[in-house]
Image (cartoon, rainbow, N blue to C red):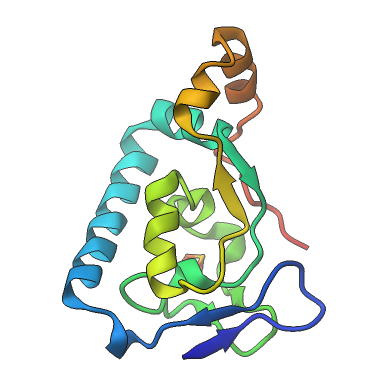
Length: 151
Ligand code: SF4
């Protein structure tokens, strides 16, 4: 297990599974998740906007999502909290994470004992608020600037 996070940071400390303990099936799930996020982030802006409008919470900077399938070489694990060395220009898939509940499930594979700072209002419940409320929530989403800048 690898501990990330630490004192003076918002959120919780993440305990990560070792890569060796992750099964082949889980690795395949994580790989498919990467492909899914790339597809959604680049080709399904409407879906992403609706999904992010359902999203609650904030990034706790545990860095768990930087360990999906492999540890990103651009993650600096020395400081607490960990930091992305290209935060200001990091890829869309990173900025948008988590896009939906499937991403949270992927993230929980590598850090099952620590919840992500984000959660989602169930889609049925969200849509039941009515078209006007859904549209207003979606208008507030700016996928180009989400999660930027960070102090
Ligand atoms: S580019 Fe940055 S945010 Fe994306 S996985 Fe790597 S360290 Fe994490």
